[in-house]
Amino acid sequence: MSWTESEGKLVRTFKSPDFMTAFNVVSAVVGPAEELNHHPDISCGWGYVWITLTTHDAGGLTGLDHRLAKAIDVALKPFAL
Image (cartoon, rainbow, N blue to C red):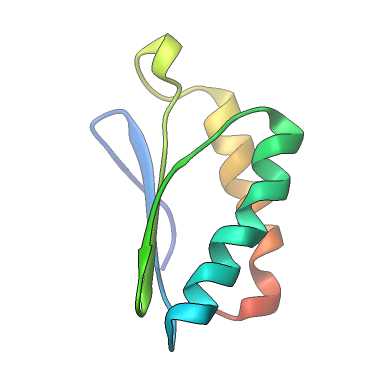
């Protein structure tokens, strides 16, 4: 599944086989988020991770959201989700 745009946000849902994988996916997002100093809203649980990107100060999407989405995609390639 790819990123979808809705109401000024980029959203992506990842399915995982278990909670530990979901947790590791969230952990893998930390590096790119810190590198870009842009932090997503993340929800995770057994079998899923939801990531939402938006630039709150701008009131919607900016180029930074798209850059972080691409960086997250690269960071999560090893998970084959």
